[in-house]
Length: 370
Image (cartoon, rainbow, N blue to C red; front, side, top):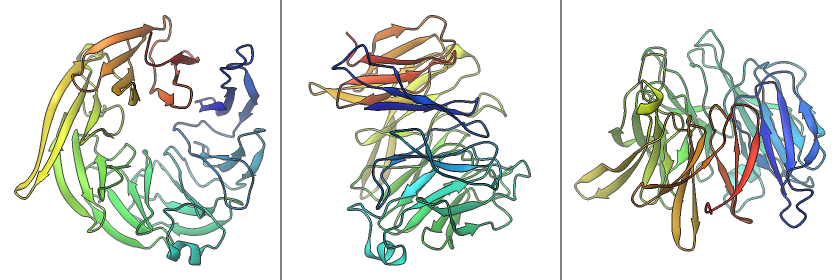
């Protein structure tokens, strides 16, 4: 019943989604909540064990962590001491889910854990912390002294109680994927995969693989059982030393993934779909199609009437609707003055796409596009 957002002025906003009463649709759910620093990533919205409702869990660039009630905008808790610059997407390991195993429930009966990571200018003195998600109380800290900046999101593996953390490699000097025991913070494995500035995602529910996207243009499939690289594919290259190859992590789609690739100019941007086929002789990663989109945002897929479509924003001030099978850019919606359009999300319940724009708007559209 709501769409929640964050922005670089440090405000968390909430708007109503009400298709039954259009006069209320899009209105403020509550006044913007001012944080102590800018928010530069999305945030999870989760139920917490033993508490009513749902909660926004987020960190800010001033280093503060907090949980906010989605019904009122009130703080459930907020830290009083800054952790250090927080840019990455925090994650929460929940107690009350079917995925949670007995080892977690025994270690933290009736408790959820929230994980935050820092992006410090020192480049090596970063840390990951686990907090009690209901109170903000510290549980453990991982600070090995050689941890690069954490800019993207982390990934929870419920099956093995592991936390995957992608970091900067400091020119290749540091291992950039750290795998921790989520119960204790103990390091279990580390892999050198280049700068990882994007979120880590699971590659389908039936496959024990994580997709890891590095800034140089390589996508890795990481075996979540053996904690090692299963396959890799060179998909793109950096436009320059300071610009990553992608605008978002590789998003799993139907036996493969979709990537949004940045070019040296806006016009060179493109969205591509790649297939991943594994057999007894090995894994083959193959490009299926490539569609030009000026400086594309991240993408989001939606299926309606048996047809799967892909939605992506561009710096041409348009939202693009692509056919997932062919990549054909069949329909667009124009938002003049937007400057650039961000990564959309789709509310499957009411078939509505929500998206933010660089000029400060939040918009909703029916999908598929009319």
